[in-house]
Amino acid sequence: MHNPALAWSTPTGALIATGVGGVAMLLAAAAVPTDPAGRVLIGLGALGLLVIYVL
Image (cartoon, rainbow, N blue to C red; front, side):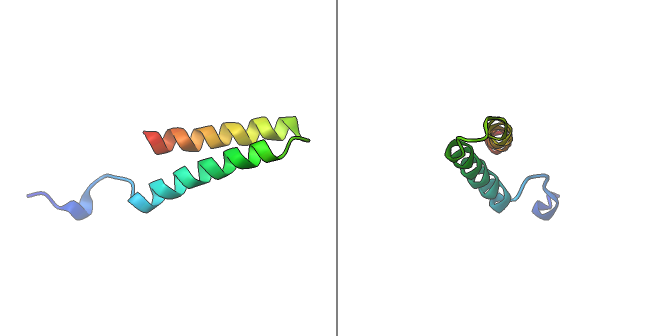
């Protein structure tokens, strides 16, 4: 018998928050032109969140 309460999946709300966070971080990276190293690190973090969102 299948019990949906024990399903192995990420909650939908968490996935939406991950996608929104990734987009927000990409916008933040684009908005701070004075710190190139920070832009790269924030951009990498944002891309990581978006990859998790897509998978």
